Length: 321
Image (cartoon, rainbow, N blue to C red; front, side, top):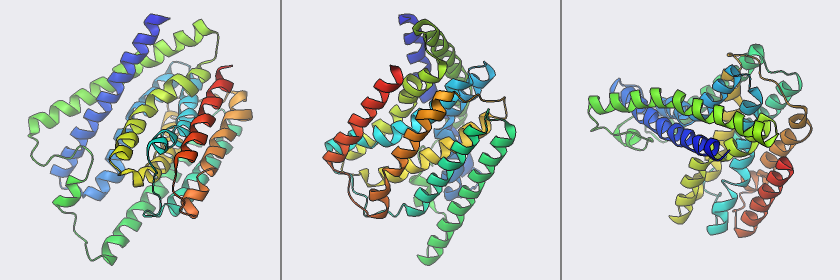
C-alpha cells in the first residue's frame, strides 16, 4: 500500500501543477483574443482551478468508481469550510465585514439543496447533470450581470489592463510559445494525474477494506483542498484573508454544480446510502455554519478556528471508523 500512497501523491502533484499550467495558458490565450477579463475570471479561471477535481470525477465514473467522484465533491465541500477556513483562523482573524457574500451564499445553499435532492433521486444520471449545469449557467449569468452593473455604477465600464493583471495566471508579456507550452502541459498532465490518483486510490480502498467513497471523502478530498488551504494560510499570514469566505463559497458552489453535473454525462454516479444518511447532512450543516459570518458580518477568530478544526478532525474519525 505504501507504493500506492506514493503513486496517489504523485498523481495529486501532477494534477495540481497541470491545473495551474492550464489556467495560465488558457487565461493568456483568452486575453490575447480580446475576451474581457471579467468573463475570463468567471469562466476559464473557475473551470481551470477546478480541473483536477473534474478530471478525477470523470476518470472515477469511467472506471466504475463513481463513489470516489461523489465522495471527492462532498468531502471537498466539508473540508473547504471546516479546514480551509478553520486553520487560517487559528493564525489570524479572518475579516468578513468588507465583502458582501450574502447573494453568493444564498446561491450556494440553493445549490447544496439541489445537489442533495439529486442524490436522493440517484444514481445521478445525465438528466440530473443537465439540471445542475443549467443552475450553474444561471449563477454565472447572474455574476456577470451583477459585475457589469457594479462597473456601470462606479463609472468603470472598460476591461483594461488593470483588470487583466488581477487575474490568476495573467501575464501580458508572456510569449506565445510559452502560452502553448503551459496549455499543452495542462492538457497532458491532467488526465495523467487523474489516472494515477484514481487507480491508486481504488487499490488503497481495496487493501483497507473500505469503499472508494470513503477514500474520496478523506484522502482525495483533503488532497484536492490543499491548494485552497495553502492560499488561504498565506493570505492570512499577509493579513489579506478577507476574501477567503467568498472564495470558499464560490468553490463549493462550483464543485456541486459543475463537477458532478459534467461527470454525470460520462456515466451514472451511484450514491452510497451512508452518504445519504450522514455526509450530505454534514456538508449542509457546515454550509449553514457560515450564516453568522455572512449575514451578521462577524469576523472569524481563533475560537472559530479551533471549533472548525476540531469538528473536521471529528468528522474524519467518524468516516474512517
